Image 1 (tube, rainbow, N blue to C red):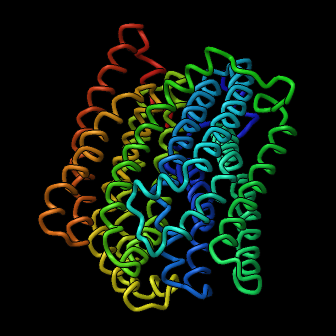
Image 2 (image 1 turned 90 degrees about the vertical axis):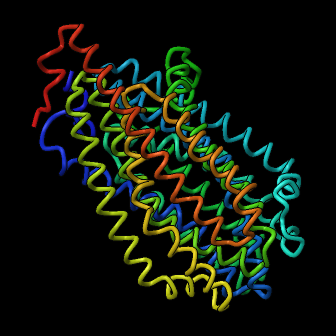
Length: 467
Protein backbone atom coordinates (compact mmCIF):
# COMPACT_ATOMS: atom_id res chain seq x y z
CA UNK A 1 0.00 0.00 0.00
CA UNK A 2 2.79 2.46 0.86
CA UNK A 3 4.70 1.77 -2.38
CA UNK A 4 2.48 4.14 -4.32
CA UNK A 5 3.39 7.02 -2.02
CA UNK A 6 7.01 6.07 -1.52
CA UNK A 7 7.95 6.77 -5.14
CA UNK A 8 5.86 9.89 -5.55
CA UNK A 9 5.89 12.89 -3.25
CA UNK A 10 5.74 12.68 0.52
CA UNK A 11 4.57 9.74 2.61
CA UNK A 12 2.62 11.45 5.38
CA UNK A 13 1.68 8.27 7.20
CA UNK A 14 5.07 7.32 8.68
CA UNK A 15 8.12 8.97 10.20
CA UNK A 16 8.66 12.05 12.36
CA UNK A 17 5.61 14.25 12.02
CA UNK A 18 6.67 17.84 12.81
CA UNK A 19 9.50 18.06 10.22
CA UNK A 20 7.15 16.75 7.52
CA UNK A 21 4.42 19.18 8.53
CA UNK A 22 6.85 22.09 8.23
CA UNK A 23 8.34 20.82 4.97
CA UNK A 24 4.85 20.72 3.49
CA UNK A 25 3.48 23.92 5.04
CA UNK A 26 6.34 26.34 4.29
CA UNK A 27 6.22 26.08 0.46
CA UNK A 28 2.43 26.08 0.66
CA UNK A 29 2.49 29.28 2.72
CA UNK A 30 4.88 30.89 0.25
CA UNK A 31 2.56 29.86 -2.60
CA UNK A 32 -0.38 31.46 -0.82
CA UNK A 33 1.56 34.65 -0.18
CA UNK A 34 2.52 34.86 -3.85
CA UNK A 35 -1.09 34.33 -4.91
CA UNK A 36 -2.09 37.06 -2.48
CA UNK A 37 0.46 39.36 -4.06
CA UNK A 38 -1.64 39.35 -7.25
CA UNK A 39 -4.14 41.56 -5.47
CA UNK A 40 -1.61 43.32 -3.24
CA UNK A 41 0.40 44.55 -6.21
CA UNK A 42 -2.82 45.82 -7.75
CA UNK A 43 -3.49 47.89 -4.64
CA UNK A 44 0.08 49.14 -4.25
CA UNK A 45 0.43 50.24 -7.87
CA UNK A 46 -3.01 51.83 -8.09
CA UNK A 47 -2.63 53.49 -4.68
CA UNK A 48 0.66 55.12 -5.61
CA UNK A 49 0.56 55.78 -9.35
CA UNK A 50 -3.07 56.34 -10.35
CA UNK A 51 -4.16 59.91 -11.05
CA UNK A 52 -7.15 59.28 -8.76
CA UNK A 53 -5.29 57.34 -6.08
CA UNK A 54 -7.78 57.18 -3.21
CA UNK A 55 -10.86 56.60 -5.38
CA UNK A 56 -9.12 53.98 -7.55
CA UNK A 57 -7.72 52.20 -4.48
CA UNK A 58 -11.17 52.12 -2.91
CA UNK A 59 -12.68 50.86 -6.18
CA UNK A 60 -10.28 47.92 -6.50
CA UNK A 61 -10.25 47.01 -2.81
CA UNK A 62 -14.02 47.24 -2.30
CA UNK A 63 -14.45 44.27 -4.64
CA UNK A 64 -12.45 41.86 -2.48
CA UNK A 65 -15.30 40.49 -0.38
CA UNK A 66 -17.45 39.90 -3.46
CA UNK A 67 -14.64 38.23 -5.42
CA UNK A 68 -13.86 36.05 -2.41
CA UNK A 69 -17.48 34.90 -2.24
CA UNK A 70 -17.08 33.18 -5.61
CA UNK A 71 -13.42 32.24 -5.56
CA UNK A 72 -13.47 30.81 -2.03
CA UNK A 73 -16.38 28.51 -2.87
CA UNK A 74 -14.35 27.13 -5.78
CA UNK A 75 -11.24 26.80 -3.64
CA UNK A 76 -13.32 25.02 -1.00
CA UNK A 77 -14.41 22.44 -3.57
CA UNK A 78 -10.77 22.05 -4.65
CA UNK A 79 -10.00 21.07 -1.06
CA UNK A 80 -12.43 18.20 -1.60
CA UNK A 81 -10.30 17.07 -4.55
CA UNK A 82 -7.21 17.37 -2.35
CA UNK A 83 -8.70 15.19 0.40
CA UNK A 84 -10.08 12.56 -2.00
CA UNK A 85 -6.70 12.30 -3.74
CA UNK A 86 -4.84 12.17 -0.42
CA UNK A 87 -7.10 9.36 0.81
CA UNK A 88 -6.62 7.45 -2.45
CA UNK A 89 -2.85 7.80 -2.06
CA UNK A 90 -3.12 6.63 1.52
CA UNK A 91 -5.07 3.58 0.36
CA UNK A 92 -2.59 2.93 -2.47
CA UNK A 93 -5.47 2.88 -4.97
CA UNK A 94 -3.99 3.96 -8.34
CA UNK A 95 -7.25 3.59 -10.27
CA UNK A 96 -9.05 5.86 -7.83
CA UNK A 97 -6.23 8.41 -8.16
CA UNK A 98 -6.58 8.47 -11.95
CA UNK A 99 -10.36 8.83 -11.79
CA UNK A 100 -10.00 11.65 -9.26
CA UNK A 101 -7.56 13.62 -11.48
CA UNK A 102 -9.83 13.59 -14.52
CA UNK A 103 -13.01 14.24 -12.56
CA UNK A 104 -11.45 17.11 -10.60
CA UNK A 105 -9.95 18.91 -13.60
CA UNK A 106 -13.18 18.73 -15.61
CA UNK A 107 -15.10 19.97 -12.58
CA UNK A 108 -12.67 22.88 -12.17
CA UNK A 109 -13.23 24.03 -15.74
CA UNK A 110 -17.00 23.85 -15.34
CA UNK A 111 -16.97 25.81 -12.07
CA UNK A 112 -14.62 28.43 -13.51
CA UNK A 113 -16.81 29.06 -16.56
CA UNK A 114 -19.96 29.32 -14.42
CA UNK A 115 -18.31 31.87 -12.12
CA UNK A 116 -17.06 33.85 -15.11
CA UNK A 117 -20.51 34.07 -16.72
CA UNK A 118 -22.27 35.02 -13.48
CA UNK A 119 -19.63 37.58 -12.59
CA UNK A 120 -19.47 39.26 -15.98
CA UNK A 121 -23.25 39.47 -16.42
CA UNK A 122 -24.13 40.65 -12.91
CA UNK A 123 -21.04 42.66 -11.90
CA UNK A 124 -22.79 46.02 -11.63
CA UNK A 125 -25.87 44.50 -9.96
CA UNK A 126 -23.66 43.01 -7.25
CA UNK A 127 -22.06 46.40 -6.58
CA UNK A 128 -25.46 48.10 -6.35
CA UNK A 129 -26.64 45.44 -3.87
CA UNK A 130 -23.51 46.11 -1.80
CA UNK A 131 -24.40 49.83 -1.73
CA UNK A 132 -21.15 50.72 -3.46
CA UNK A 133 -20.01 54.28 -2.82
CA UNK A 134 -21.13 56.60 -5.63
CA UNK A 135 -17.56 57.90 -5.98
CA UNK A 136 -16.11 54.49 -6.75
CA UNK A 137 -18.87 52.38 -8.36
CA UNK A 138 -17.88 53.04 -12.00
CA UNK A 139 -14.22 52.16 -11.46
CA UNK A 140 -15.20 49.20 -9.26
CA UNK A 141 -17.41 47.87 -12.04
CA UNK A 142 -14.61 48.18 -14.62
CA UNK A 143 -12.23 46.21 -12.42
CA UNK A 144 -14.78 43.55 -11.49
CA UNK A 145 -16.01 43.04 -15.07
CA UNK A 146 -12.48 42.37 -16.37
CA UNK A 147 -11.41 40.34 -13.32
CA UNK A 148 -14.14 37.72 -13.75
CA UNK A 149 -12.76 36.74 -17.16
CA UNK A 150 -9.86 35.19 -15.24
CA UNK A 151 -12.11 32.94 -13.12
CA UNK A 152 -11.62 29.75 -15.21
CA UNK A 153 -7.83 30.07 -14.93
CA UNK A 154 -7.99 30.80 -11.21
CA UNK A 155 -10.15 27.74 -10.48
CA UNK A 156 -8.21 25.38 -12.78
CA UNK A 157 -4.92 26.39 -11.13
CA UNK A 158 -6.27 25.84 -7.62
CA UNK A 159 -7.64 22.38 -8.47
CA UNK A 160 -4.42 21.34 -10.21
CA UNK A 161 -2.29 22.60 -7.35
CA UNK A 162 -4.56 20.82 -4.83
CA UNK A 163 -3.98 17.52 -6.63
CA UNK A 164 -0.20 17.99 -6.65
CA UNK A 165 -0.21 18.93 -2.97
CA UNK A 166 -2.16 15.79 -2.08
CA UNK A 167 1.03 13.80 -2.72
CA UNK A 168 3.24 16.34 -0.97
CA UNK A 169 4.35 18.35 -4.02
CA UNK A 170 4.25 21.97 -2.84
CA UNK A 171 7.41 23.01 -4.72
CA UNK A 172 6.10 23.20 -8.28
CA UNK A 173 2.95 25.20 -7.43
CA UNK A 174 5.27 27.66 -5.66
CA UNK A 175 7.48 27.97 -8.76
CA UNK A 176 4.48 28.53 -11.03
CA UNK A 177 3.06 31.24 -8.79
CA UNK A 178 6.47 32.91 -8.68
CA UNK A 179 6.53 33.08 -12.47
CA UNK A 180 2.94 34.33 -12.61
CA UNK A 181 3.66 36.87 -9.86
CA UNK A 182 6.56 38.36 -11.83
CA UNK A 183 4.30 38.64 -14.89
CA UNK A 184 1.66 40.37 -12.76
CA UNK A 185 4.09 42.91 -11.33
CA UNK A 186 5.61 43.79 -14.70
CA UNK A 187 2.23 44.19 -16.40
CA UNK A 188 0.85 46.23 -13.50
CA UNK A 189 3.66 48.76 -13.74
CA UNK A 190 3.46 48.96 -17.55
CA UNK A 191 -0.32 49.23 -17.83
CA UNK A 192 -0.81 51.73 -14.97
CA UNK A 193 2.23 54.02 -15.15
CA UNK A 194 3.08 54.66 -18.84
CA UNK A 195 -0.11 53.29 -20.46
CA UNK A 196 -2.37 54.85 -17.77
CA UNK A 197 -5.11 52.19 -17.93
CA UNK A 198 -5.83 52.71 -14.20
CA UNK A 199 -8.08 49.98 -12.67
CA UNK A 200 -8.55 48.27 -16.04
CA UNK A 201 -4.78 47.82 -16.24
CA UNK A 202 -4.42 46.10 -12.87
CA UNK A 203 -7.39 43.84 -13.63
CA UNK A 204 -5.91 42.84 -16.98
CA UNK A 205 -2.50 42.17 -15.40
CA UNK A 206 -4.12 39.93 -12.80
CA UNK A 207 -6.04 37.74 -15.24
CA UNK A 208 -3.01 37.33 -17.54
CA UNK A 209 -0.95 36.12 -14.58
CA UNK A 210 -3.75 33.74 -13.58
CA UNK A 211 -3.79 32.15 -17.02
CA UNK A 212 -0.01 31.78 -16.90
CA UNK A 213 -0.17 29.83 -13.61
CA UNK A 214 -3.11 27.72 -14.85
CA UNK A 215 -1.34 26.74 -18.08
CA UNK A 216 1.79 25.79 -16.15
CA UNK A 217 -0.04 23.51 -13.73
CA UNK A 218 -2.07 21.85 -16.53
CA UNK A 219 1.09 21.30 -18.56
CA UNK A 220 2.66 19.66 -15.50
CA UNK A 221 -0.25 17.27 -15.04
CA UNK A 222 -0.15 16.39 -18.74
CA UNK A 223 3.52 15.41 -18.42
CA UNK A 224 3.17 13.78 -15.01
CA UNK A 225 4.04 10.11 -14.74
CA UNK A 226 2.04 7.79 -12.54
CA UNK A 227 -1.23 8.26 -10.71
CA UNK A 228 -1.54 12.04 -11.24
CA UNK A 229 -1.12 12.03 -15.02
CA UNK A 230 -3.77 14.01 -16.90
CA UNK A 231 -4.91 12.68 -20.30
CA UNK A 232 -7.27 15.10 -22.04
CA UNK A 233 -9.26 12.41 -23.85
CA UNK A 234 -9.97 10.76 -20.48
CA UNK A 235 -11.60 13.88 -19.02
CA UNK A 236 -14.99 12.84 -17.69
CA UNK A 237 -17.01 12.75 -14.49
CA UNK A 238 -16.63 9.50 -12.54
CA UNK A 239 -19.70 9.33 -10.33
CA UNK A 240 -18.11 7.91 -7.17
CA UNK A 241 -15.18 10.36 -7.19
CA UNK A 242 -17.37 13.32 -8.17
CA UNK A 243 -19.79 12.67 -5.32
CA UNK A 244 -16.90 12.18 -2.89
CA UNK A 245 -15.23 15.43 -3.98
CA UNK A 246 -18.52 17.31 -3.65
CA UNK A 247 -19.34 15.66 -0.32
CA UNK A 248 -16.04 16.87 1.11
CA UNK A 249 -15.55 20.03 -0.94
CA UNK A 250 -19.02 21.59 -1.05
CA UNK A 251 -19.25 21.98 2.73
CA UNK A 252 -15.79 23.56 2.60
CA UNK A 253 -16.99 25.90 -0.12
CA UNK A 254 -20.12 26.69 1.85
CA UNK A 255 -17.95 27.30 4.91
CA UNK A 256 -15.91 29.83 2.92
CA UNK A 257 -19.06 31.41 1.54
CA UNK A 258 -20.39 32.00 5.05
CA UNK A 259 -17.32 34.07 5.82
CA UNK A 260 -17.68 35.89 2.50
CA UNK A 261 -21.40 36.60 2.91
CA UNK A 262 -20.79 38.00 6.38
CA UNK A 263 -17.90 40.07 5.05
CA UNK A 264 -20.07 41.40 2.21
CA UNK A 265 -22.58 42.59 4.81
CA UNK A 266 -19.76 44.26 6.71
CA UNK A 267 -18.36 45.75 3.49
CA UNK A 268 -21.81 47.13 2.69
CA UNK A 269 -21.82 48.81 6.08
CA UNK A 270 -18.27 50.03 5.44
CA UNK A 271 -19.40 51.56 2.13
CA UNK A 272 -21.38 54.13 4.10
CA UNK A 273 -18.11 55.81 5.12
CA UNK A 274 -15.81 57.97 2.98
CA UNK A 275 -13.63 56.72 0.11
CA UNK A 276 -10.54 57.20 2.28
CA UNK A 277 -12.08 55.08 5.06
CA UNK A 278 -13.04 52.36 2.58
CA UNK A 279 -9.52 52.37 1.15
CA UNK A 280 -7.95 52.30 4.62
CA UNK A 281 -10.11 49.42 5.81
CA UNK A 282 -9.30 47.45 2.66
CA UNK A 283 -5.60 48.21 3.08
CA UNK A 284 -5.74 46.75 6.59
CA UNK A 285 -7.50 43.64 5.24
CA UNK A 286 -4.86 43.25 2.51
CA UNK A 287 -2.05 43.41 5.06
CA UNK A 288 -3.76 41.04 7.50
CA UNK A 289 -4.35 38.60 4.66
CA UNK A 290 -0.64 37.79 4.54
CA UNK A 291 -0.90 36.40 8.08
CA UNK A 292 -4.14 34.57 7.32
CA UNK A 293 -2.66 33.00 4.20
CA UNK A 294 0.34 31.76 6.16
CA UNK A 295 -1.91 30.25 8.82
CA UNK A 296 -4.26 28.81 6.22
CA UNK A 297 -1.30 26.91 4.73
CA UNK A 298 -0.94 25.12 8.06
CA UNK A 299 -4.65 24.31 8.06
CA UNK A 300 -4.41 22.91 4.51
CA UNK A 301 -1.42 20.87 5.68
CA UNK A 302 -3.53 19.44 8.50
CA UNK A 303 -6.28 18.54 6.03
CA UNK A 304 -3.92 16.79 3.60
CA UNK A 305 -2.05 14.88 6.33
CA UNK A 306 -5.35 13.87 7.93
CA UNK A 307 -6.59 12.64 4.54
CA UNK A 308 -3.58 10.43 3.84
CA UNK A 309 -3.57 8.99 7.35
CA UNK A 310 -7.32 8.44 7.27
CA UNK A 311 -6.91 6.56 3.99
CA UNK A 312 -4.13 4.49 5.56
CA UNK A 313 -6.25 3.82 8.65
CA UNK A 314 -3.83 5.57 11.03
CA UNK A 315 -6.29 7.55 13.08
CA UNK A 316 -4.21 8.26 16.17
CA UNK A 317 -1.61 9.98 14.01
CA UNK A 318 -4.32 12.41 12.87
CA UNK A 319 -4.70 13.57 16.47
CA UNK A 320 -0.96 14.29 16.57
CA UNK A 321 -1.33 16.21 13.32
CA UNK A 322 -4.04 18.33 14.92
CA UNK A 323 -2.07 19.20 18.06
CA UNK A 324 1.16 19.97 16.18
CA UNK A 325 -0.64 22.17 13.65
CA UNK A 326 -2.52 24.03 16.40
CA UNK A 327 0.81 24.73 18.08
CA UNK A 328 2.30 26.01 14.82
CA UNK A 329 -0.76 28.22 14.24
CA UNK A 330 -0.53 29.77 17.70
CA UNK A 331 3.17 30.57 17.38
CA UNK A 332 2.80 31.85 13.82
CA UNK A 333 -0.30 33.94 14.46
CA UNK A 334 0.98 35.56 17.65
CA UNK A 335 4.46 36.28 16.28
CA UNK A 336 3.33 37.68 12.92
CA UNK A 337 0.47 39.58 14.56
CA UNK A 338 2.86 41.31 16.94
CA UNK A 339 5.30 42.14 14.13
CA UNK A 340 2.60 43.58 11.88
CA UNK A 341 1.14 45.67 14.72
CA UNK A 342 4.60 47.09 15.40
CA UNK A 343 5.07 47.97 11.70
CA UNK A 344 1.45 48.88 10.98
CA UNK A 345 2.05 52.47 9.83
CA UNK A 346 4.96 51.54 7.58
CA UNK A 347 3.06 48.63 6.05
CA UNK A 348 0.00 50.77 5.35
CA UNK A 349 2.17 53.46 3.76
CA UNK A 350 3.33 50.94 1.14
CA UNK A 351 -0.21 50.81 -0.21
CA UNK A 352 -1.01 54.51 -0.06
CA UNK A 353 0.79 57.73 0.92
CA UNK A 354 -2.51 59.31 1.99
CA UNK A 355 -2.58 59.96 5.76
CA UNK A 356 -6.33 59.21 6.31
CA UNK A 357 -5.93 55.84 4.56
CA UNK A 358 -2.90 54.94 6.69
CA UNK A 359 -4.62 55.91 9.94
CA UNK A 360 -7.69 53.74 9.27
CA UNK A 361 -5.57 50.75 8.22
CA UNK A 362 -3.35 51.01 11.31
CA UNK A 363 -6.35 51.36 13.62
CA UNK A 364 -8.04 48.29 12.13
CA UNK A 365 -4.94 46.14 12.64
CA UNK A 366 -4.85 46.95 16.35
CA UNK A 367 -8.38 45.59 16.73
CA UNK A 368 -7.93 42.46 14.60
CA UNK A 369 -4.38 41.14 14.87
CA UNK A 370 -4.18 40.31 18.61
CA UNK A 371 -6.80 37.59 18.05
CA UNK A 372 -5.83 36.41 14.58
CA UNK A 373 -4.21 33.18 15.80
CA UNK A 374 -7.64 32.01 17.02
CA UNK A 375 -8.86 32.01 13.42
CA UNK A 376 -5.87 29.83 12.46
CA UNK A 377 -6.58 27.26 15.16
CA UNK A 378 -10.22 27.07 14.01
CA UNK A 379 -9.04 26.34 10.46
CA UNK A 380 -6.84 23.46 11.68
CA UNK A 381 -9.75 21.82 13.49
CA UNK A 382 -11.88 22.21 10.37
CA UNK A 383 -9.10 20.76 8.19
CA UNK A 384 -8.71 17.67 10.37
CA UNK A 385 -12.44 17.01 10.36
CA UNK A 386 -12.48 17.42 6.58
CA UNK A 387 -9.63 14.93 6.21
CA UNK A 388 -11.64 12.38 8.18
CA UNK A 389 -14.72 12.84 5.93
CA UNK A 390 -16.56 14.95 8.54
CA UNK A 391 -17.03 17.96 6.26
CA UNK A 392 -20.63 18.88 7.12
CA UNK A 393 -20.19 19.79 10.79
CA UNK A 394 -17.83 22.82 10.45
CA UNK A 395 -20.21 24.84 8.22
CA UNK A 396 -22.85 24.54 10.94
CA UNK A 397 -20.55 26.22 13.44
CA UNK A 398 -19.47 28.86 10.93
CA UNK A 399 -23.03 29.60 9.91
CA UNK A 400 -24.01 30.31 13.50
CA UNK A 401 -20.83 31.93 14.81
CA UNK A 402 -19.71 33.85 11.74
CA UNK A 403 -22.53 34.46 9.32
CA UNK A 404 -25.54 34.80 11.62
CA UNK A 405 -23.61 36.45 14.44
CA UNK A 406 -21.93 39.10 12.26
CA UNK A 407 -25.14 39.95 10.42
CA UNK A 408 -26.96 40.41 13.74
CA UNK A 409 -24.03 42.51 14.98
CA UNK A 410 -24.19 44.80 11.93
CA UNK A 411 -27.94 45.38 12.21
CA UNK A 412 -27.93 45.91 15.98
CA UNK A 413 -24.73 47.08 17.67
CA UNK A 414 -23.18 48.73 14.61
CA UNK A 415 -26.44 50.43 13.69
CA UNK A 416 -26.63 51.84 17.23
CA UNK A 417 -22.99 52.99 17.38
CA UNK A 418 -22.23 53.65 13.71
CA UNK A 419 -18.42 53.48 14.00
CA UNK A 420 -15.80 51.48 12.13
CA UNK A 421 -14.49 50.15 15.44
CA UNK A 422 -17.79 48.43 16.18
CA UNK A 423 -17.55 46.64 12.82
CA UNK A 424 -14.03 45.44 13.54
CA UNK A 425 -14.98 44.04 16.96
CA UNK A 426 -17.30 41.52 15.32
CA UNK A 427 -14.32 39.56 13.92
CA UNK A 428 -12.49 38.41 17.09
CA UNK A 429 -15.72 37.66 18.95
CA UNK A 430 -16.97 35.44 16.12
CA UNK A 431 -13.63 33.58 15.97
CA UNK A 432 -13.72 32.79 19.69
CA UNK A 433 -17.30 31.51 19.46
CA UNK A 434 -16.37 29.41 16.42
CA UNK A 435 -13.34 27.93 18.20
CA UNK A 436 -15.49 26.76 21.09
CA UNK A 437 -18.03 25.02 18.83
CA UNK A 438 -15.40 23.37 16.61
CA UNK A 439 -13.44 22.13 19.64
CA UNK A 440 -16.57 20.39 20.94
CA UNK A 441 -17.29 18.93 17.50
CA UNK A 442 -13.82 17.50 16.89
CA UNK A 443 -13.84 15.87 20.33
CA UNK A 444 -16.90 13.84 19.32
CA UNK A 445 -15.50 13.22 15.82
CA UNK A 446 -12.35 11.60 17.21
CA UNK A 447 -14.39 9.57 19.65
CA UNK A 448 -16.59 8.30 16.81
CA UNK A 449 -13.58 7.46 14.61
CA UNK A 450 -11.78 5.56 17.37
CA UNK A 451 -14.96 3.71 18.30
CA UNK A 452 -15.47 2.57 14.69
CA UNK A 453 -11.85 1.44 14.53
CA UNK A 454 -12.22 -0.61 17.71
CA UNK A 455 -15.46 -2.16 16.43
CA UNK A 456 -13.59 -3.28 13.30
CA UNK A 457 -10.77 -4.69 15.43
CA UNK A 458 -8.30 -2.02 14.22
CA UNK A 459 -6.60 -1.59 17.55
CA UNK A 460 -3.06 -2.02 16.22
CA UNK A 461 -1.72 -0.13 13.21
CA UNK A 462 -4.80 2.03 12.83
CA UNK A 463 -4.37 3.52 16.28
CA UNK A 464 -0.57 3.78 16.11
CA UNK A 465 1.34 7.00 15.44
CA UNK A 466 4.27 5.44 13.57
CA UNK A 467 6.67 7.90 15.15
